[in-house]
Length: 479
Image (cartoon, rainbow, N blue to C red; front, side):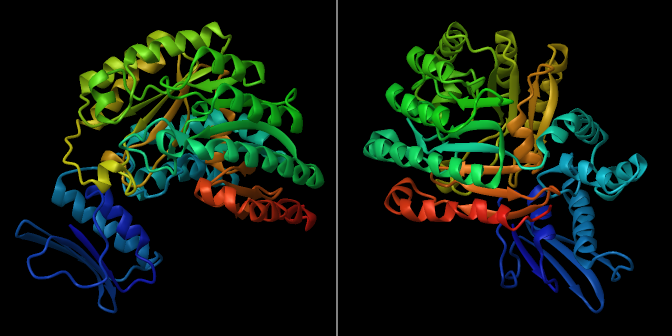
């Protein structure tokens, strides 16, 4: 199914709306050939017109040029209505293509909209299901006091990226290096990372910034050796005030490289929250996605984390993994709940273009992901409540990712980065520093080099770019 759009300066909304119904459908700049499966949407002086053609059948919808509405949204709405009728599907988030529905609620409340006006926006204009909207609205309410704290003037979070993994999962599109091939890069990378942390500290001090959370993610941070973890977390402790932090998270996601010694180091150097991410408790599914460990290894890793004194643990699950079933996902969910972690994050599988699943064009069968997510009704009964939510392009059945937590164990960094309320200073390859002014508007980004070898080789340029942090605040933007 190809997508062909004419007559608009930007066809973004139409393009991504079509992919709600036809994931990964390519956009073409030339008219489709006769008989070729396509969605053809156009805007011209005579009005709006959309045609869908598939398997030798076709259907067309037309409408006059809109009054009081943008042509882009009107054409997207016409396309949505045609594809709903054509496929018989009603997407749970309707015609929403944005990744932050909760942020939209916050923004409209801040702009003075009434609750009834926001209700109509989601339920009528975007055709969201009542179930999804209720969840988004409940999350927005829970987040409000946390966001007030996170949006204090000059508050910031620190992100540290470790782009190494013991193996690459088939669904992953992140830039990460396989340890078997690139182990020689790890120590030079850690050395540079510690120097970058010193530079960030100087910039933050010069700008008068106050650190609220630290997050060490990846990749897989525990792919570092115990000595390298000590070096890195020692650099964090030496350069930043940890006693007043709201949260310090380290991803310890892979049990095939997370052992008791590393868990002890993470605890010793001040982390208050860790992630152990099974994705599934099915050995068969783990093998299919390229994991080199068993479900038993996950259980043992979790027990070792508790023995090391970790009292705030998150566990990630993914709905829709190749070879999984609704019953299999429910088993994984019940197993995670039975362990009683403080957080359980449920992701929906996203078909990312740089992932092995997509690049190898693997023939996969995916279970009913919506039915999998319905099993999340087990979470409230076990004492969890949703606290953050985001969406991604090309997610199966246009569904969402939701973080669930026990009350008082919400992941602050997850909320801050998703709702974009504070500055995030990023260290490491692929790092994206996001500078936010006092009014809460995103003003500027500073990017690090994407690949670890380039980050190491051009490290002096990384340090030079970091000077943009203090320069941003020297101009008193937003004050």
